[in-house]
Length: 178
Image (tube, rainbow, N blue to C red):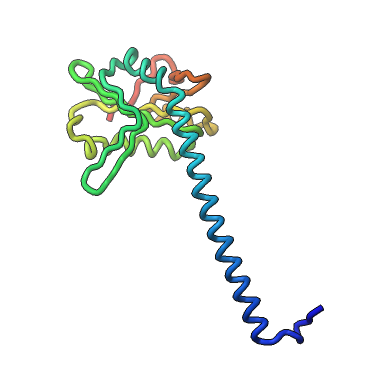
């Protein structure tokens, strides 16, 4: 067995270089793993959106009287880009835009995210100016208390169960209009 006193300076430098190389490889593998896990999260989110889309579209047309329903709408203005999980709007008497944010797991941050989308909607889609804006936060799994917080903020809430999109806001709920 080699002892510390048997190691030369060159041996020590070689060991340190080998450890540094192993550390770089570990860092590279961790970055790749994060990328793959992020991709899985995106796929699960797209799955949740796609799973509920047929019933969501039906509800938007029947209950909210939306004429236009655009899933996964991507908009670019100047150097900024925004993606809406579902954007629906109607002209005429209804004159409303509904922004739907779909999450596989709904966390508290999703409330602020949806409100920010509602507040900046006309920056990205100025052609919709003059319409009332309403938000629906939908998810498969909700963190405790988040559904109630979203409703208190004036957002409709919905759950996705068995490929069905169901509003969960109480009867008589009055949404906030932006």
